[in-house]
Every structure is written in structure tokens, then in C-alpha cells.
Image 1 (cartoon, rainbow, N blue to C red):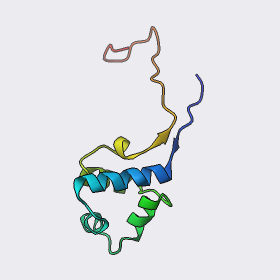
Image 2 (spheres, rainbow, N blue to C red):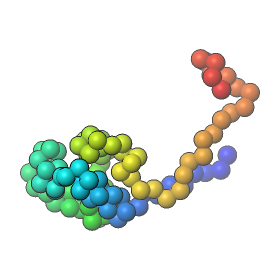
Image 3 (cartoon, helix red, strand yellow):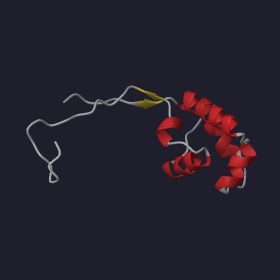
Length: 94
């Protein structure tokens, strides 16, 4: 099996967040309030691609934007689905 290399494109992910926010009619202040942040700096860093939300904040953001985390992320590469031949799992599915 070959190793899988994936990379999150931070800047493109920030642009995607901004696009989704715009589509839903949300501004930074709306997201800040919904996430319970005292100030908007973290959100501006996400939108500019300087940082990414932690997993908990990604989950909250995905709920706010009514989409999946995978739909927010912009990723280089892809994972090939691996199947083991001839081995059954406990429930009988290959």
C-alpha cells in the first residue's frame, strides 16, 4: 500500500468559508456571535488563510453554514478507497 499525502489549502479554504458565508447571508459578526467569540480576530485569520479552525470550531462552522466540514475544506490530493480482497469483516461485508 502506498502512503497517502493530503494537504489542506489554507488560503483556498478561507476563501471557501467566505463564499459559503456570503451565500448564507452571514457576516463575520454573525459567525462570531454564533460561535460565542468575544472578538472576530480568529474568524478573520480563518478567512485570510493564516490559520484554520480547530476541529470543534469546524464542526460548529459547518452547522452554522448548513454544510459538511468536507465541503468547507479545500484539499490537495485524494484518498483512494482501499478494499481487502478475500477477507470478511464481522458483519460479512468485504
